[in-house]
Image 1 (cartoon, rainbow, N blue to C red):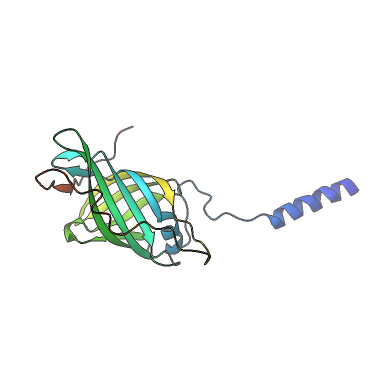
Image 2: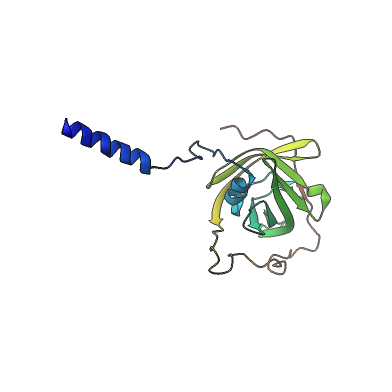
Length: 190
């Protein structure tokens, strides 16, 4: 009987000291927009449905930098990599402001034609996929996280890159490439 009481006591202590993980589901189950913004902050690479000069981009880096500890809004950069006519890898940069509101992610670019809303998505600390919507159209995207922004809890500056790095990725071609998102595309068949 004493052994049974000890086992019950041990199980009770283990249950009492364990915590419940609200993000237990694969793909995340977030309590509020701050949790989404926290998970979103960082750098993501993959296919964002971008075409440059009629060709599918090699890949896109999306960077989300929070402006404060609420993780509800911030600024970011979209870098689209593509092969030019000579076969060299080049990049186009676009800066944007972002916010998370009512479970949707809004991205506001300087060019209003690129503004978009991401509302039907799956987000976890390692991947981000779904559909990006723009003016009644939608395209599939799939990104992987490769750099996180962790808070310093007041002991130093937040790790953020410089806002103006246009001179590093300036296009070397004579003509300015045209970057568009192709909409109404189905997700890739696996």
